[in-house]
Image (cartoon, rainbow, N blue to C red; front, side, top):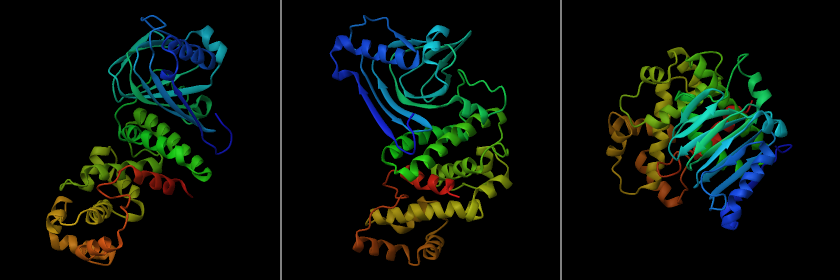
Length: 350
């Protein structure tokens, strides 16, 4: 890992090498750096297609990878002794099918959209026919210090709890934002990502999002993400949000922060979506837009919109057309996850 608030980007593409050298290059570089030994059933000189971009910071390493060839990876006490990496690696497999893995005497199968932890100080073996995904590497000592004594992460597959699901959605966002982050943002982004991982692990053990063991930042982000994903549902209520996220009603209200109530937060998000839709569409019927966004009628939507923006929906659309305004983060036609960069910065600032 690098020093300070810098981000170092390292890219690897085995396809630029002669076919007969591709697997050998990958195998030798990994064995030297990590103690992981790669083998394959196919002849070693057959093509081995792998692309990886690694973003290295002082606190973590975040990779994006695409492997199109089968291989097997393993470590032993002897090979680990050469590397001595005090690291925990989290692998998020986006696609590629099932992967068999053994951790001591325990054999597990990793499926698409799983996140699995590997303690790089302990032996393991895996088999993979090719996959796409992300890997996140964190300092082992620092991570375990944030977890209950005796926590065993080796081979752990994270449950589909609200924070883990948010982590899966946001890993591509963090990767993208780290590539273009300024020096003042790198530490904030890496701390946010580390906190999400810690809270996802804690929630897997506690099974209660209301627990004081889960950071307020993660609770707040989980609430907002759930509303972002379900704001079109007309039956979206505080009771439903609390039940789906597994938190108490009082915790939900505290997580809404300055918005004071879940209902107000739902309305704010719907109004922001409406503003984006009005900027990006010319002839869309305002009454239908109001209904589609969950408002009971056009009149209620118009009053709420005027209170928020100081003008009617029609006036807002006309003014935006004249000024040729760019889409805002909540624009229905924009990348929805671009919002989270600003959001996480606001969460982590004092």
